[in-house]
Amino acid sequence: MDTSPARVVVGDPACLVVDDDDAMRMLAVLQLIELGGNVEQAASTEQALGMLDGEMAFTMVVADRRLDGGTSGIDILRRAAEADRPPTLFLMTAHVDDSVMAEATAIGATVVDKLDLQPILDAWSAVVADQGP
Image 1 (cartoon, rainbow, N blue to C red):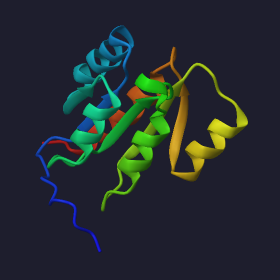
Image 2 (image 1 turned 60 degrees about the horizontal axis):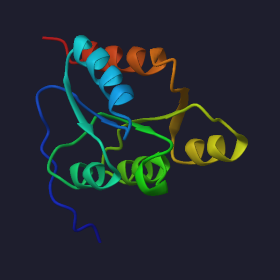
Image 3 (image 1 turned 180 degrees about the vertical axis):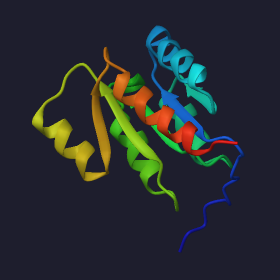
Image 4 (image 1 turned 135 degrees about the vertical axis):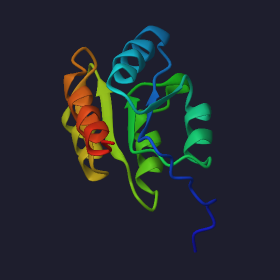
């Protein structure tokens, strides 16, 4: 039985970027903001999980693989995938191996190189364009 709070559907699509590296997080956030929509950010696993459990429904969630305290972005994405309307999921990493790829694929996440955000930007651009006037 689902006891999660009701999600608020906002007018603009919403993206959550999770990375404990301030510079990398801001780089992604600033590029996504330029494309439109609502871009939120979390600097820690705890903050990200709180936002996912909040009232906002995210259209897209982007998480770094290695987060604070040894946590994995896979944990964030797994939680996001449990939503009634799961968002598009991206895992950013500089270290891709078969086990990471398998875990990400199992929850429907796309793995991208942390130094090449273009697949994330392209996906967000398409989401924002679909919301047109």
